[in-house]
Every structure is written in C-alpha cells, then in structure tokens.
Amino acid sequence: MKNISIFLAVILFSFNCLSQTNKGSNLTDYLNQHKIDYLIKVEYNKDTLILFGYKNGNNSTLINRKVKLCRYEVLGVNEWSSIFNKGHFKSLKISITTIPFKVKTKFNEFETNATSGISNVGLNFDLGRWKTDRYFASGEKSNHKFYGGIWIAPSVEELDSIHTKGFLADGKKSKQLFVSTAFTINYTYNNLTFTFVPIGFDFATSSIGKEWIYNRRRWWGFGIGLEPKFLNTIANK
Image 1 (tube, rainbow, N blue to C red):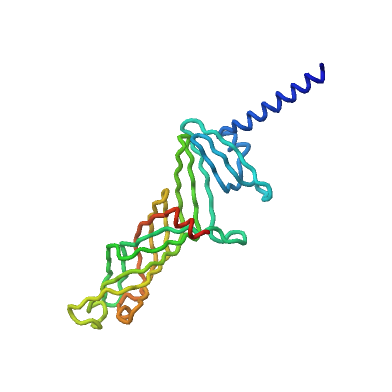
Image 2: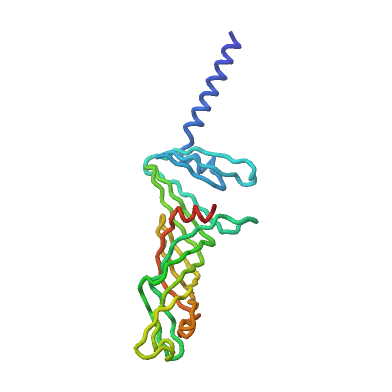
C-alpha cells in the first residue's frame, strides 16, 4: 500500500511539472529567471511565444522557453549583428532602394545642384545592424532596424552643354547611363526603409558620360526602400 502511494505521488508530481512546462513562464519570470542570452528563433501564436537559443558559455545545447504574454505585455528582443561575425559569414539582408533626392556639392564655378525624381532603383546591402523585434500579446509583431549599408544601382542622368563644358552642342541634351554607388545609413520599420546617403558617387559608362562635370564627384541624398522577403530568401540560399 505504501509503495502504491509513493508511486501515485510521483505520477502526480510529474504531471504537475509537465503541466507547468506546457503552460510556460510569464514574462516577468522569463526575464528574471529563464532568459535566453542568444536568441536564434522566435515562434509565436497569438499570446504565446516559443523562444529558441543558447545560454552564455554553452553554445552546444539548444534550449527553448515558452512564454505567455498577458494583455498589453510586450517582449522586446534586441540584436546586434553583421555579415561577418565570429569567423563566419551571416545571411546578407537586401532591400530595393531608390535615391530620388540627390545633392551635388559646389565646386569651381558650379553651384550646389539638387535634383529630385526617380532615375535610379538599386540594391541596398545591409552590412551591420541593430535590430529590435517587438512581440505583442495580440499576436502582432513589429520590427525596428538601424543599419549601415552599401547601395549599388544603375542611374540615368540628363546631360547638356553647360554640364559637359561644351562637349554637347548648345540646346542639345543627352540621357546617359551611370553606375551609382553610395554608403547608406538606414532605418527600417517592418519592411519599409528610410535611407540617408552621406556620400555617393556616379560612374560613367560612356564617352559622353565621362565629360559630365559630376562624373566621379561626391553627392549626398535621401531615399526610400522596401525589404521584400522573397529577395532575401533567394539571396541567402
């Protein structure tokens, strides 16, 4: 009889532990006692999150935590990463970006020249980022990201006699193809990116383009972009 009682007690205890494990921790318990130091994946279904990752000092054991959010609670997950981290290349994030506002700086007798209009669409490569993912009890998620990148795009510029120093005849204009490159500073909310370009250059692809006074000269500007999931999926296969 005594053995049966002990056996039943063990079963009840095990069932209770299993129930607590399936139920998961609340947000306070997770942050204070069970927080994962290095998250690699978050699965979420409404108010329940399943977090996967590693604890500091143990990179060989993948652990998971289930966290249940109460109404109005939000779990923020911060991460700094770059394409080269701890000896291996990480996935490269890419956005489709246009720089419609370009300001070419003053030099010699030519004043500062500002242009607007969509004359370029290119790829913005994310080299290093600070990212915050926020998970809400309603089942929604938001993403905030600050990053530096390199932008490359074909662009079209309209040249005239003045800006080719007479190479083109008076009254004649010519649209020429250039390759534009720039260093970018970006803020992304979900998949929408706002871009500031502190320094960029245009490189001519034709003999007429090489006569343009702004060929290979510094410019700065502002842009906007999108980070489509399909593009990142293809790029990182």
